[in-house]
Each structure stands twice: as structure tokens, then as C-alpha cells.
Image 1 (tube, one colour):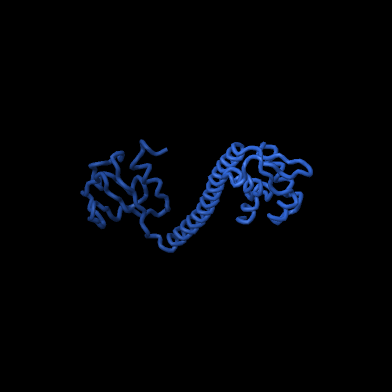
Image 2: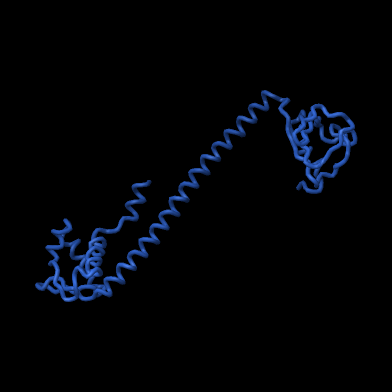
Length: 214
């Protein structure tokens, strides 16, 4: 794919030759009125076919940088037009480079997303397998200010009666209360750890957050 992208963005050889000749004119290595190589000489100098050399000269003629007459060779016509051509070419190269960088970034992001999706699939599969082998692996839920039972005790919640789940621990800051007593109050920022027989933790969320659960 990388090779295909390079080939797609490659500049034709005749255009490269036209740019090289225009650069020498813009730098006044060739001055207005000077005669430079005939097409056959250009072909030999750049190691290309006469047709490629002809196409390069045609580009420069179309832009009125040089003139070409049969039997008279190629004559420099305008330094100013050569400078304009080089500037336009450089801008195009900058745009092409930016487009190429964006395309490479998109390819990298797609590849990274595919890898991440694969890892997520593996993680979910491994978690489900582990939970099937380890039914007492607890779920957890964070208590926020939206919880309707803030300040209530574990006994007041009647947790098992409403959810079919059992609270086995509460984490509060750096302290973890294993098997909290019935008079333990539920506070904001607590993390409740619970187990459920039917592996349906969503019931707990619905119970604790009836106003925010869709």
C-alpha cells in the first residue's frame, strides 16, 4: 500500500525536468535571450526520451517561460514567469505534503482503532470467561449526588429485596468496609461492591438512579 501511495503521488518526469530548467532560469543561471539546449540535448542531459524532453519544453512554452522554434533550439523568454511557476510548484508540493500527511494519519488511526477493537473484544471475552469460572467476582458502582438513597443505611435500602444483589463491601476513600453492617450509611463518592445471582448488575443501577437511567 505504501508503494502504491508513493506511485500515486509521484510527479511525472517531464514535469520534474520543467521545474529544474525553470529553477535555473529563475536563479538567472540562464538569462532572458539565452539559447539553451535543443530538445535532443535536454533528453541526453536528463537521461530521458526525446518525447519526455519535448513535453517538458512544452510546459515551459505554455507558461511563456521559454520559446521553442524548430532549428533554433530553446530560447529563454521570461525570468518573472519562471519565478511564478516555481512558487506555484512549491505551493502545490506543500499542499500535496499536507494531504499525504493527513492520509497517513487516517491510515494510522484506522489501524489503531482496529487494534483497539480487537483488544476490547479479547478483554470482554476474557472477562466473561473469568466471570463464568468465578461467579463471586463482584460488580461495582459509584455513588454520586444523583443517587436517591444518599444518607440511607444499608438496612434501609433493602438492597437484596429490590435488586436480587448483595452488598459485600463499601469503599470510602482509602478505607474498604468488607461486609458492611446494616447501619452503615451510604455517602457520596462511596463505591459499592456487590454480587448478584443472575449476573444482571443493571438492576442495581436502575434502583439507585431511577431518575437518570433510561
